[in-house]
Amino acid sequence: MSKWPSKRRGKLDGTICYLNTDLDLISPNDLTALAAAFDSRHVFALHVIRGEDGFWHATFETGDSHAEPELNIAAMVAVIESFGKRHRTVWQHCTQREFNIGYDCGTEPWAFSQGLSCGLLARMAAIGASLRFTLYPHPSPASPSATTA
Image (cartoon, rainbow, N blue to C red; front, side):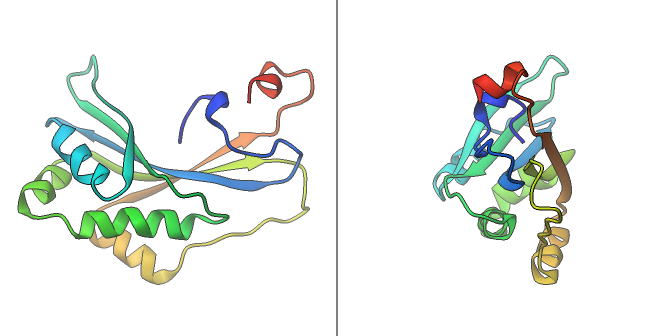
């Protein structure tokens, strides 16, 4: 997930909502060719950098906005499933392949539920991807992030 409050797409009206899903990768190998392969299929890199740790770090997301994560993740999985041997090898050498689902945690409704289908979970497992959730607290009116989002 984008870690910066200014990137949040929530309404900030107190309603719990799905924001987006990022695909986070870490690899000992250069990820720029993989980023180009994603980009050609409308999955865009938020960043592709070589970190101080010597590893390549990249975060991707779709350009589409949905009310639930299933369609965003399915779009990214479809791109990965279509990789040829060269890009598949880069993918397999990643030490982290993680879909990170983000939610804006408002105060309403009392209960909020979303899920992923067993078919999509099976596809994620088949490509060796893990799943993470990031919950962004609903900012109080006095919070600095309430005015920057």
